Length: 590
Image (cartoon, rainbow, N blue to C red):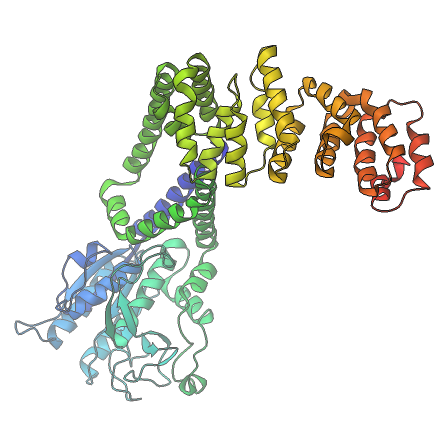
């Protein structure tokens, strides 16, 4: 159990580190995004979890889309007038501000998202042309007129025009034409995902239009630049184009939807091998953590673990937005410190628990505790319970019997059976009843019987009870008893077993008992070597081929020291028929 716990802990640590790196890289990127749009609520520039509402402004939605996918710096340039309408003069001023920033920061990658459009182009044509620079990329929405007629700035050669898609085809309202550079989904569920897209089930607000296609490209390119600082915006754009997916639309075939639909994962992998390996490590660590957690739960709770694991997984998935907020509020170091302190606290609790159950006499509590601890601690608790029961047999077995009789969990009952099997005076009848009820194999009972040193009287009583159940008319009880004896192997049992075989015709009323005895002798092996001649006598006197099969199976294990062992097998092989002949299949034994 410790091994799996350690693996799970390491996997969780690797996952957290990889996730932290994926958060930190975009934040440290030498890239800035300008959003030229309507008024933007500052909350959407800072947090990917800011809630979009029906009243959120157009600019706020654009900011939310970008922030939801990228952590680079965002600067909002609102171009509304006092009446809440887009003002062309303010728009031109915003372009001038971006141009000035670009000239003053030549080493900075600059992305400009413009999800606006004007039919008039002359007023902005000159400044757009002057803004042309290897480190500055203007990304604009194609418009929503279902037309090939260009709107601006998307229609300028210097800008990147983005058309909108819906259900893998051109969105009905989206503009199109040979000037389109690329396409992206235009039906968007804002806050649809965070950093583990396949896991998140957070809130959604649906928005439509090419306005919401452009920021997806902006965010993707900013992320590519963050993961690979050797790229410039135009090189990143080329990778996005070459990795784009085909579109199932005739307009795409006619080169009117650009290079295709953006494929974020493919573009990021192509743009940065580091992103690929970081993603691989993140999800591999998460998978290993989940798998080892399931194994730990399985070892503790058996089939119930599947329900526990599923419930925990659903809770974590639903709580993912909260966990992201927690991460952002507390920071990576505090979270690691908290995990470390929780581990120390759990160890302290374990130490205190161990001290308590080594000194307590509360059997009910000890029994309850034994179900939920690891194998080593469970073994220590069992020893403590057995010690208490053996020293106070009066009130001892009643507690176990009561709990055993109303038990419905085979794994818990197995622990109780282990305790009963270690008592000085073994309640064999209760053990066999419980084994039968829970459909458990009985081999482990014999192993548990061996863990207690009993006096001769207790051994003799146990031997007598085992023989009694071995000769029982109930086949299942016979089978379970044979399994117990086969793993218990107290040589005291050999005396009554030999007597039974000598007088088998008088004592044994069915062949099953005889078969079980022969299987037991086979398990005893060389310890029952003095049975060899008796087995040979029974073999020679019997005409039952099934009985001969079991006799030979036992003899092969316990008669190897006979001088004529091989001769006996060879001699009888010629006379045998199936199934007895099957016992001599192994060539090295004939």
